[in-house]
Amino acid sequence: MPEENKTSLSGLNRLLSIMESLRDKENGCPWDQEQTMQSLTRFTIEEAYEVVDAIAKGNSDDIRDELGDLLFQIVFYAHIAQEEGEFDFNDVANAISDKLVRRHPHVFSKTSASALSQEALALQWDAIKAQEKAEKRANNASGLLGDVPTGLPALMYAQKLQKKCARVGFDWPNALPVLDKVEEEVGEIRQELEAETRSKAAIEEEIGDALFAMVNLARHCNVDADTALRKASQKFANRFSAVEALALDKHQSLEELSLAELEALWCKAKTREKS
Image (cartoon, rainbow, N blue to C red; front, side, top):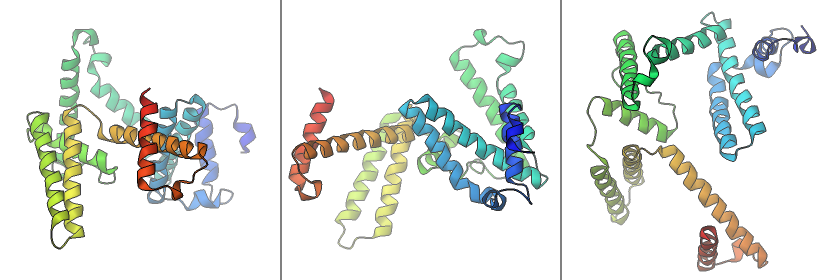
């Protein structure tokens, strides 16, 4: 069925039909034909980050396009699963629909949402998720942390592990002792750096411990660690671009400037930022 004849289909049905054509064993695209769930995962991660980047930049056309790219990834996985007789796109849609209805009894049952406080809604959400996880653990006996995906970005993985443990009471009472832990871990990095013989493995381990403690501190402060780091990185990138612009105004090359001169431009860019 030629693609030009599919434009009368709904957007989603059209996309599903295109996916079927791409994977067609005789007339499909060779690249799409050879993909597997495993080979697609890196593209999925890239597409998710591109959605986040488009939202941060606030361009609605880019947001639409990047969401389409991410949706295509889901359609692709579902089609591969359908070929293998596991599930199809409708099963995926129905699974999330069932979950949303199950987790929102205040919307889809006789209970009025307005009768519940934000705190009560949060407790209800956690209780339903806990029940779901308990049932899943009973089926696969994988333990409390068994269903946390190890392939998550490191900051998100750390935060999810901490949240899981916090739900069973294994957590600091507030942010202050976590801050003490951060300072302790930073001190241990210093000890390794000042050791007579440096161990790269030991330094890596201590830096990892400090990062894990920082994620814990962010969680206790109701701050998403990934978002905080992303904003800090973007601030750095913007400020460094300003340093480049200041050097260009003076017809200077960054490579020719000393560290002290670069620091001076950095401070100037920082001052302009605040004015």
